Image (tube, rainbow, N blue to C red; front, side):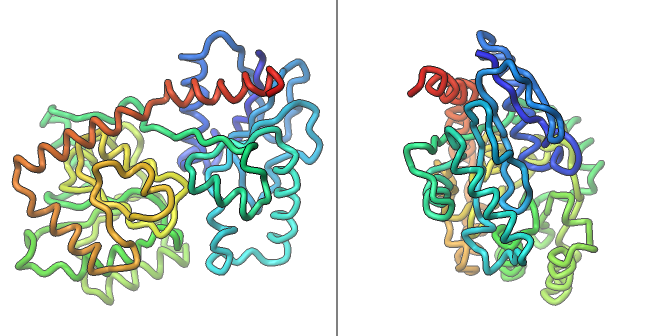
Amino acid sequence: MRIAIDTTPLGGLHSVRGTGAYTKLLVEALQKYETKHSYHFFTQGQKVPGNVDIVHYPYFDPFFLTLPLLKTKPTVVTVHDLIPIVYSQRFPRGLRGTIKWNIQRISLLTAFVIVTDSEASKQDIHKFAGVRKRKIRVVYLAPAEFYRKITDKTLLDKTQRRYGLQSPYILYVGDVNWNKNVSGLLKSFAAIKSSQAPPNLKLVLVGRAFTDETLSETSSLVTLMLKLNIADRVIRPGYVPDEDMPALYNMAKAYIQPSLAEGFGLPVLEAMACGCPVICSNTSSLAEIAGPALLVDPQNFSEITDGILKVLHLPDARMSVISEKGREWARQFSWRKVAAETVGVYEKIFAGQ
């Protein structure tokens, strides 16, 4: 088969976000593991190659016109989540956004197959976009292969100095959107008394948005840190390139994902692949991929606090067991498997199934 893939997410701001990482890793995995097919690439505004069998759009945004209404070839669309639609009261769209969502939804209905990251997202796509369930295929994502346990202390120390990190710390990686529940994390962290944890315990928030105080969400979080009197205990290194992230996970006492809703939650598996204990919400897709993680109710701040303390107080022997269980769980998710299952979607379309 000849497959055309829209690689628009590899450029611009999307290149350092989840959609850019997904597109990059998918293309690399297809070319590495599924070489019996040929892959051809285009970006938005360019003409789709005419001599292909299938077209794949690995990126969908409900409020931007990322899909063509007219499709000349069988089309696959990856929809990571519909969180802005599901929680519309938290993501005001306005008249223009509503019009674009209706156009995107109509275009989505004419796609041959929708690929999504989780059963939770599949249910949302069916309910809110009106796509029949039999047209939606779940393909779980995976951490990149470079996420691993690191034993090189020199490398760890060098990375720690580069980002001004102080041990011990709890790590969060992601954005500042409402569904990420960062405000809840800050309140839960602030509730940890010095008598309950190391007095120098820090919270490290990784993500470009955390250093951009022109964003209203970031500005509100900074105000909250000051109000809670924890600004000096929160480290915001901003964007951290992929090559440094394994070291940050390795050095963390725990990774925490307190989201109210997620389409997948890839940092959970990245942390586990590095042997870092994970605390995460018991909601949406996170419940599907959590494995040996400690689950908490994201709307119960005291439960999040208790979860952090529970991990901090684990004996070394128990911590080692949890670390190994996490690594074992994360190994079930691989980009070889993502590539094989994605090609399986292509082949069923090609066979007319």
